[in-house]
Length: 109
Image (cartoon, rainbow, N blue to C red; front, side, top):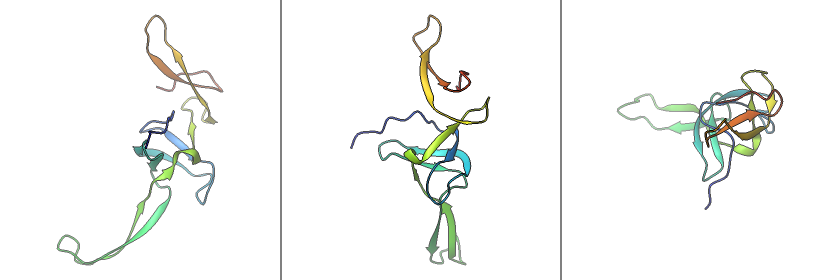
């Protein structure tokens, strides 16, 4: 299975554009590019039932974040605070590419 090309990175602030959590925003905690998923802080909570163990003698129901599809996420620019597209551009004489906000033309990295 090939990795999904994405312009999102770990620690980016994103917003959900579709699904049950539409409109909520959070920081990307973990990326799974081969599966096209990301874990976002405070988004897509699921409940897990756990048996009592030595570490957790109570057991019970735990809530945790589940991965969400990258297609449902859109980046929020740090400068203009709007959801935006991303494009890549070379910087000066160096051959490095940086991510640029399509709305305010500021560097994201």
